[in-house]
Image 1 (cartoon, rainbow, N blue to C red):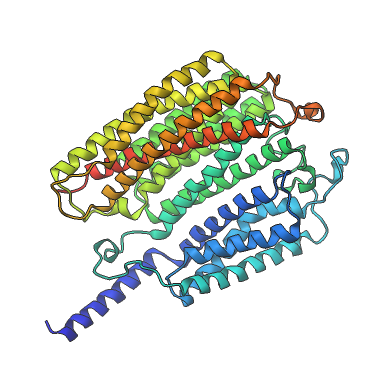
Image 2: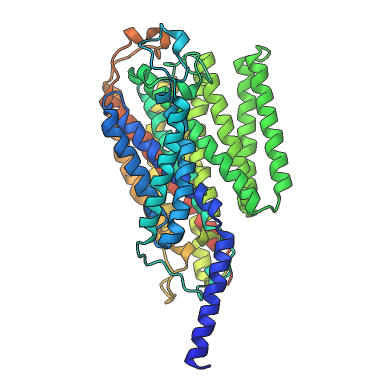
Length: 541
């Protein structure tokens, strides 16, 4: 074959790859993935800039938020070309704007001076509709500009048509990105939830699903001056963001990977119907909080088992459906905790949140390019290493969940035996998580070939687990010191007690929440060590 023939063949393969890639990654899918990414980033910055202790002026916070959106969109589409970049950017900007309306509602609503003006709470300002349309237009324009700039940025991404996994056209990058964004969205929700617990803010809002009788999305920003109200209310807002992201991921996965969709939809409908029926019965006073508790636990266990089985059978649609059910159950548990002031539901809600995070990163891994590739073979020695890492990570995971239950029991119920069980069992967790992480970083010294993508991810998360467990161990002792020195603050203040409630313990809240958040990160790292160990163990020879 002459050089000219080779170039012609290469060009033909490039066109074929481009057509296949465009078909597998349509504009609408890119809009969803990048739009949700921009929204999650903007929400995180919004939370920081609107903290009662920070509360930046709108003239300062506004440009920061819009710059955050532009930066995320530009970085997301970099290297795709200015022409395609602005097309992706404008749609992503509009998707982000639609999601961002959920927090913009606090600005578009009437701003009463206090709770006494109950009739004004939850009402839209005059001209709120025009303001919302203007926000949509501005976000679309920012997205188009950011997309054009980002698309022009050169990257080192390998776009060669001879790259096997890309040439097959079997991977939906936008779906993988959407799954990753959905998993990342759980992180700030967990962090804010930890702050809610650490600051005794769980009962600052007396009703659910509304906020002081108003639509949750229209509760005025002017009434969030109290730190406890702000934290509890924004925790609910972020919960709605995660729920929307998970629902979008589920529907998108079914649309792209219809295999097993009947089972997935059927399972979702049945579980959600049972859950909503239980909730309706509870709200109708036909079920006590104690009777509803085992039902929610059973549904959560069923959904978790369903997700694990879906993972083992490589059915991403069903896994995403099970994850969506778990998120819905989390919302119900959190709501009943408020309406009944039931600490048992607070415990269930706390453990469930970290479980959702671990399973969310599992689904994100399932939909990633490295996971779906089937062209990379490994040696028997590598397979043995992967199996050992998987087994050790599963054992460490079991111990981590026990440790999580100990910690949550103390945080929510104040049981001293749970605290000391948590302290002593930490030594077991540190050893097992460290061993599992070390097993994940091990490599076949006799293999001279570059490691496969699953092998690289296994090593990365193994190393991450080792580093995070060391940090967590140190934070654990710092947290114990803070907890041991604090005075008894009494029961969690309810809404009618906020005026006389003690000030928020900022230092204690930061230390304890850091420990809780790092624990969630460790749980995710060990989970991904098991996930990638499993993926590598079943790679072809």
